[in-house]
Image 1 (cartoon, rainbow, N blue to C red):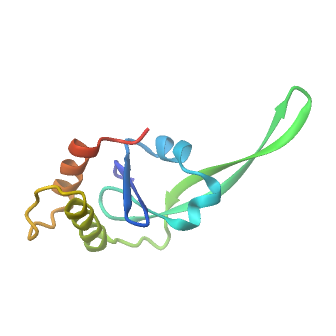
Image 2: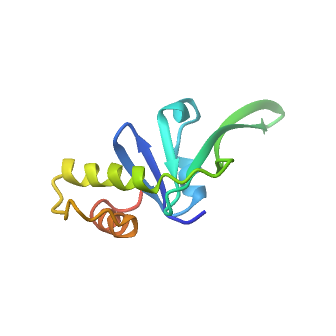
Length: 117
């Protein structure tokens, strides 16, 4: 997966430096409302993962989020470019509306809104 990881939560965009940061940040109960992509536009799959843990001697199940490539591989580069362009426009950023270069849009947005941790 090419980083950053891009999460779309109904038009609210977040960027994560790596998969681990995204997995730690996302809530398992909300994964059905998220779309996830890598920086090349490939669709990512969000899964709930259950981990058995112990608090002293008492077992409990912790749910976490696990991110993997979607199979078959689906490239949504054009879709994510349009999504990021709309996010730029709605955020009041001055962008060339004819420029759909995904790498440039990602760099611009990371510079403006920073990475989520």
